[in-house]
Image (cartoon, rainbow, N blue to C red; front, side, top):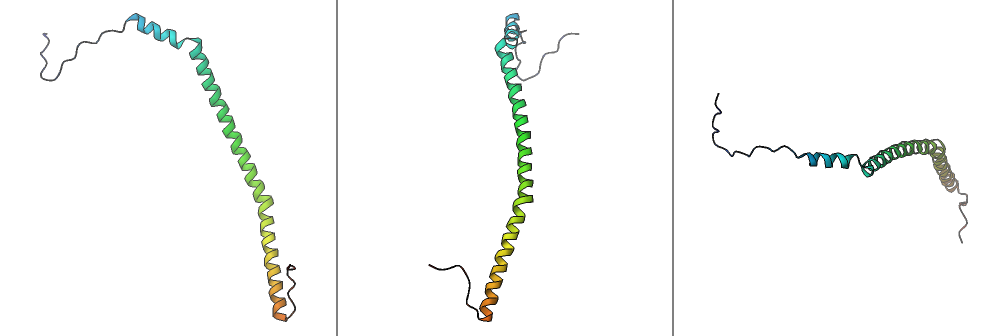
Length: 105
């Protein structure tokens, strides 16, 4: 069967096969000690960053739960005490007793 002529469009030249020296250079570059050290450094950096991220998350969780357990009840109690002192001061002023607030200088 004869090859049919192409209709319209642009015909591109036939692709040349890559010379042997180009593939040989690529093989030399990928197997060089510098590239292997770079790959190892990238893997090590990824491992360390993953560990750091994981431990940072654990530390944040510990800090958050400690804050909730220790500090929040303290804040609530201090607010209650302040409200109680204001209520006592208001009742004392209604009963006619002199206010016993902090001494003014």
